[in-house]
Length: 224
Image (cartoon, rainbow, N blue to C red):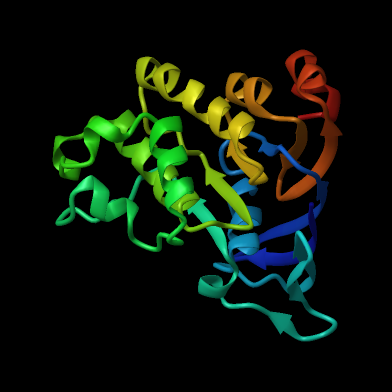
């Protein structure tokens, strides 16, 4: 369960978010620049809202009234951005072991689920974009996070590589119990992966939808 009730400003841009998501994949959808990533950054602890609260599972990560603001490195969240941000001087296995929780059985599950076994000895410069993003997903998952935050993880890939990585995201959703917050402006990704969708417009959550409702949604319905 994730609860996000926050207000604040990023420069001159106002953020007003009210989200309640459960298990599975909760998605933030909207055009580029709508404020989706700012909301994710608040959950990750990379941006401090002016007011509100953020709860993931049973952990209160931010509560302005009670002066709670857990530092980003103590929030136990796995974050994957558009760029994989792998360590270039480490091979794949050492990248994956960075922050690894030590659960050997889970290691084997993640390696198999994301099909990483034949990549372990490679260095990042010998990976395709899709392979690098799978490594980033695996590294985030192997930290044993309370939640995965995926910020436009496929946006930097061409259509062919996006199509290659999407099935791995579906396996991650279906074969683990880790809740996921997924941010994207690609409607096809959201409708394929999400259980619940929140529409973000001009920094504000304006609508809650199912993936089926999103498929039929027309932005003219909101006046934009």
